[in-house]
Amino acid sequence: MKNPLKDERLIQGLMGLWKFDDIKDISSLISFDLEHGIHFFDISDIYSSGRCEEKLGAVLKENPFFREKMIIQTKVGLRRVSSGEHMNYYDLSYDHIMEGAEASLKRMGISYIDYYLLHRPDILMDNKEIAKAFKELKASGKVRHFGVSNFSPEAIEYLLSATDIPLEVNQLQLGLGHLDLVSEVVNTNVENKEGTPFGLDLFFYTKRKNMALQCWSPNLYGSQRTSIYTEPALLNLQNKMKELAAKYSVSSPAIANAFLFQLGDNVQVVTGATSQEHILEALDGLKVHLSKEEFYSLYTSSGNLLP
View 1 (cartoon, rainbow, N blue to C red):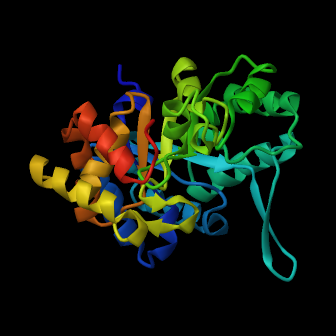
View 2 (cartoon, rainbow, N blue to C red; view 1 turned 45 degrees about the horizontal axis):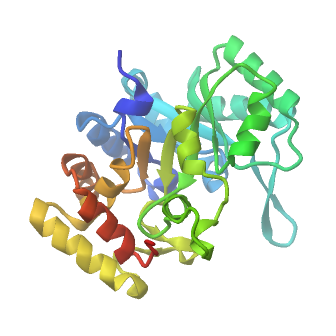
C-alpha cells in the first residue's frame, strides 16, 4: 500500500489559484498533475480569504472524478481581521478548528479532508482543546490525518501529550535560499550564530518522529521573498546550479529540488509552479541523485558556513 507521505514526494501548492480567472485552467492544471503522478495538493483556508478553496471546490464540482485521485491537505489557525488595515492573528481554539474544518469542507464541496494542518503555533493554544477537536473530527470521518506547520519540537510534544492521534506532518520553509534547518545541524558545537538559528534540532526531530517534512516556498530567498534563481546575492549558487544542471541534463529548479529530496525520504517539496514546463522541471528533481560533494557544494554556494 502506498504511503502518501513517502511516495508523494512532490506536492502541488494551490496558493496561486487566486490568479486563475477561468475554472477550466485550474482543471487543466490538476489534470496535468494527476497525469504526471502528482496526487497531493496543498491549500489553506487563509489563501485569498478562502477563495482558493472555493475555486478548488468549483473544479471538483465540475470534475467529481478528480476527488478519488487527489490527496487534499488544508490548514487552519490563521485569521484575518480588517481594522483600518489587514492584519492576521492566530486562533487554534476548539471552536475555530471545528468551524474551520466545516467551512473548508463546504467551500471545497468534499466530505473529508485527507490532511488537516495547524497553520502556525498559537501561543494561547490549549492542547486539551486541540485534542478534543482532533478526536471529534477523526471520529466523524471529516478528517483522516493531522499535522502542523511551522511548529517547534516542544510545541509538537505539548500537543502530543494530550492525544494519541499522531501528528504526521510538519510543513516548514526549507530551500537553498532558506537553510536554517540544515545549518543548525552542520554547525553543531561551533561557536558561531549559524549553529543556533532554532536551537531545537528540528530536522532530526521530524525524522525521529517519522513525520513528513514538507518544504514550503523552496525557491524563495530567506525573508527577502526574492527568487533563488535571480537574487543577486546568490550568484555563486546560481552558477553552481547551472553547472550541475548541465552535468545531469536538467534545469536549475530540478537541481534545487534534488538537493531537498536528498535530505531524506520523509522530505516532500511543495511547488507553487502552475505552468506545465515548471511542474516538469520540479519533477525532474526526482531523477537526480547528487554526490555528497555536490550536495555540500550547493549548501556552501548558498552562502552558508560549513565548519
